[in-house]
Amino acid sequence: MNFVEAVKACLRKYADFKGRAGRPEFWWFMLFCMLVSVVTAVISQRISGVISLLLILPAIAATARRLHDIDKSGWWQLVSLVPLVGWLVVLYWYLQPTQPQANRFG
Image: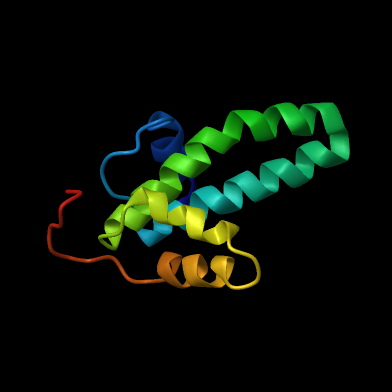
């Protein structure tokens, strides 16, 4: 999956918390979110705030689908709120390879 396909897929599944998202889809979309945030922050803080609000739901949905891809519930992304080590644990999960076999999420 390339950059454009990943962004289209994640925006098409704007609030879809079901299914799976492989590493390329997840990481390309996160790169897109970061680039859009940086560009809009340079232009205007208000525009950046609005864009961030528009992208937060598809980012959470893509993250949940990424965790489903490694057979974890999407709720596990809340572990990133644990101070100091939470984001490291979640980052480790995001970097895990896709499970080739079907799991409870698809």
